Amino acid sequence: MSTGELMTPQTSKGTAASKPRRERTRVMGAGKQLHAGPLTYVVLTVFALVSLAPLVWTAIAASRTDRRLAQTPPPLWFGGNLFKNMERAWEEGGLGTAMFNTTFVAATITISTVVFATLAGFAFAKLRFRFSGLLLMLTIGTMMVPPQLAVVPLYLWMADLGWSNQLQTVILPTLCTAFGTFFMRQYLLQALPTELIEAARVDGASSLRVVWHVVFPAARPAMAVLGLLTFVFAWNDFLWPIIALNQENPTVQVALNSLGTGYVPDQAVIMAGALLGTLPLLIAFLLFGKQIVGGIMQGAVKG
Image (cartoon, rainbow, N blue to C red; front, side, top):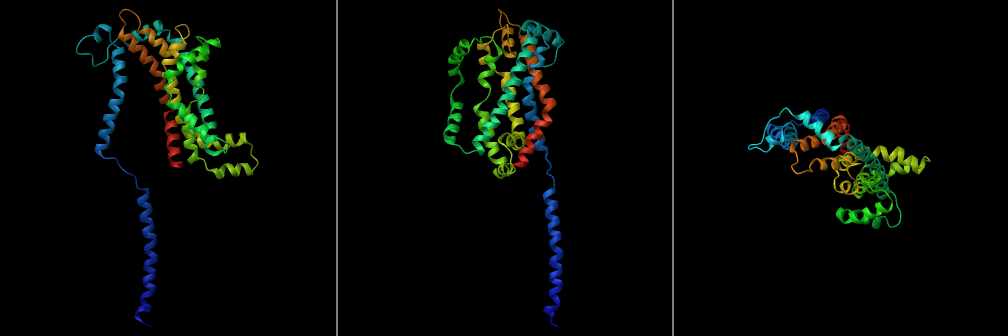
């Protein structure tokens, strides 16, 4: 038997033994976690402090007196008038009614926008119908029109309907948005396989069952993000509510605007009212932040 014949089994055995070892090395390398360096923590800390600075300053100003805020240098730490100023802002601005109205308006707008935008986005992304491209372009084109141009005709329309100073005046124009439709369309275009819809059709599912059992579960991460953005926008909206509503039936932003009226506005009370108007958003994020971030990460993994 030749030397080449003797070496062949050993060589093949060594090659076969080295393959699992290389595979294990690759798996260990793929599962290895990345660790952040000191510079990463420094940058994140700086960004966090810069982001929190306006909120902290609002709380500091709300805890001081108007006379102290007018002095130089301004206060850099909390005072003892926070709850007193909050009580004044709550009573003078009518924030109780404003909080209820804003919660109702923001929740209604958020639910309707998420549902309608998801349905429209699904239609533009996966359904075939005539003039779909033209309709999508028209929808996107409305985002380029400044909202100030629609104030006068929109106000005249609501006055003709007899809805002046009523909450439906604020709700109706924003039941669905072009941004939400485009956002959901772009997400469903990648996250929802067409084969999954076709399989549901083959199983005899109706259009309603396809939307409920296929589209909505696949779009849940994007729906969470869109819902958060829509709720924050509706809560902070100022231009249209200040035109359509008055102090008898206000939202939070309209009520806060009344705190700034007068010959000498009390800046501490205004800051206390602004802090009260911001607290519901902070509480909502603290309660649902993990679910929202988890939905975003789930969508990222699926994509």
